[in-house]
Length: 573
Image 1 (tube, helix red, strand yellow):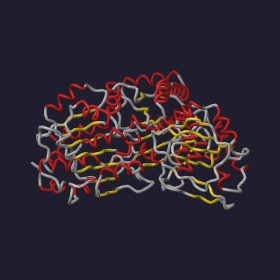
Image 2 (cartoon, rainbow, N blue to C red):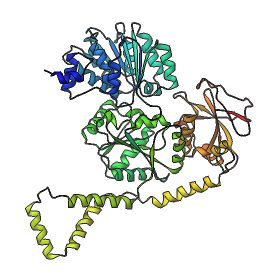
Image 3 (cartoon, one colour):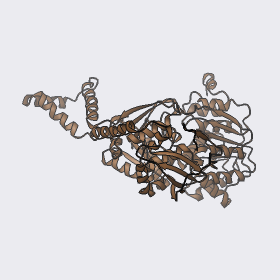
């Protein structure tokens, strides 16, 4: 039985649910759980913005379970998640919370046995947790009956849209004809999400528990600069310096996760990768090993790692420039969860660092700018750690046979010689990283000299590079993502491995974009079709001359934005 003191912690829910929370070790609600539970009218549509790791899952499960509208026999609640892993984690939460409440939960995710899922549905599951693709498969096959569903929850809705699930979401929402309310739980609110909500939600209640531009104030952000041709070596040095107990490393592509994890394994790290090419069984095995601590480093793409709720990730590492600030904050949100402190380190070349500074300019995110540690720095730190271990062993009893061995050796050799030989053995078995300092300094000096030589006549010229007149190129934009000027800038810099100063006059026209590139960026543009396509661009024939129109209306942006330069010319972004 719960005592009265503990019951007070869980005011707003029934005794059975409160007892389940106490058994699980909870002592109080998180802010997002408190805000949702104290709402007077929970039967209306709702939008909740809260950062990753804030307790959103229980924030929607607790009130839904507490109201007692989960009769067995047919689905009553549908919870949609962007990834298999997040859907499975949410289903696990839903199942332990349902114990003793006669509530059955079915999980509908790809890569798993369809017949087992059909069996769960036929046995009368009232709570359905699934990914949009597999849920729509069941809907089309007629194995999922939507007639009795009164609530749809979109968990991490922004991520589902970012992953291209808009058509699936609309088909599912259209099929839920008895839906009384739709709840959205999301960290961000991009334009495409707002359009979807306007279509399907009516006068929603809005709760926001995040500050714009700084979603993770409990996370310490660091930028490590490394030579641009030695990114992986720089990452290895950063890992040796940071020494994470459990770290998550983000890469841009599936192939990159494989290459990076293989290289880290060769360097002696306990590392493996997680990506979309793996079967669900392989992904589950990897995640289980990571959660249990058998693997210290998990290398993943944004998609594979979205929604992961792995406890005790103390550090996140990002290799290369993120697409935008939202991607940067989403990645960092894998650590510092539930009020715990965390660290987020991003590994960039000097030119990427310049672009990243521009991306952060309109935010309140504070970062610490560092050069990647050199092999000498790492060796010095490792020796300090070893000294601490050797000298701080007063509480541990030394084995008598080892003491006897030590006395016998000291009779045959000088103490300094013996100790130096033992330390040499320790040093030889410990990786010390790579010598990067001089190469990084040369690259930074080159970047600095270019900046000093660049004319300061105009903001537009400063953004357009200083190595001669810019040339205009035209590219199609892949429709799989929501494009804006900031995303185009970061993506083109990533694709061509140039800085923001080499790109100017970005003009988005519906599904295409016109960009002016410096001569160096243009040279790389001509030889990097594969990289451009990876980042969402397809080359087109450039226009013979610039459009004289004073503004451009973009279907993607939905509004005009005119910026005047110092010569009173008008250009559109």
